Amino acid sequence: MSPSLGWSGLGCLRGGRILFEGLDGRLGPGEALLVRGPNGVGKSSLLRILAGLLRPAAGSVTRDGGVALADERSALDPRLPLAGALGYWAHLDGRGADAVADALAAMDLGHIGAVPVRMLSTGQRKRATLARLIAGGQPLWLLDEPGNGLDDASLDRLAAVIEGHRASGGIVVVATHQPLGLGPAAELVLA
Ligand SMILES: Nc1ncnc2c1ncn2[C@@H]1O[C@H](COP(=O)(O)OP(=O)(O)OP(=O)(O)O)[C@@H](O)[C@H]1O
Image 1 (tube, protein in one colour):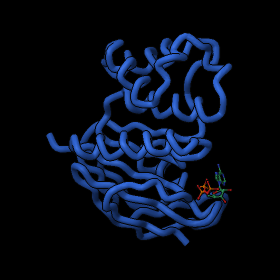
Image 2 (spheres, protein in one colour; image 1 turned 180 degrees about the vertical axis):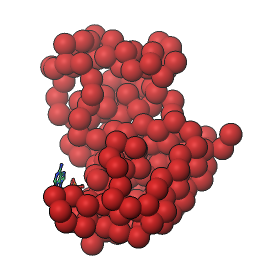
Image 3 (tube, protein in one colour; image 1 turned 90 degrees about the vertical axis):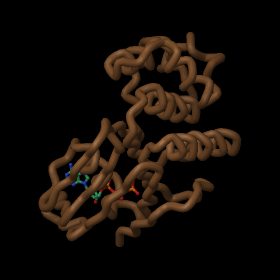
């Protein structure tokens, strides 16, 4: 089955205010969407709606394939060693230790797999969140400001990982304030 992500007539109401309405779109294998706009305009809300974590005020979302969201919450147990914390989620996704090792390597975290999550630096925690997404092996990636806190080398790695995911048929939606050096992608500017 080819993955796809579609949304139709999508509207979002938060705190009694309409953030956006009437959004339509569809992404197929290898496609990406960059979501842009100023702070508070509703980018994170849109990603949470696409993930199925927030109910839209109007419209609907259709997903073919499993979805994974990476936002500012790492969702990793702070008490566990990094590899163990990633392994917990990978196991739920039916993935093995090799998937965790590959994800750690992709984000250049292999040398700190034994370090407890609570001791990671800001950038390492961000990379760990991305490693969780990579290890999960889901086709639909929703990335909320994935470049925040990353140094130049990590930004390059992030772009390579996203493009690799697309090349293998995955779909990516990215809310970002910074250019990430991705290949051709659709753009949605919320205003
Ligand atoms: N649970 C909530 N109840 C009411 N309002 C909320 C709630 N969560 C978010 N909002 C409001 O919805 C608006 C959109 O928030 P959102 O996080 O989607 O914006 P964003 O575009 O991702 O912003 P940023 O660029 O700062 O990350 C903001 O004004 C925010 O205060």
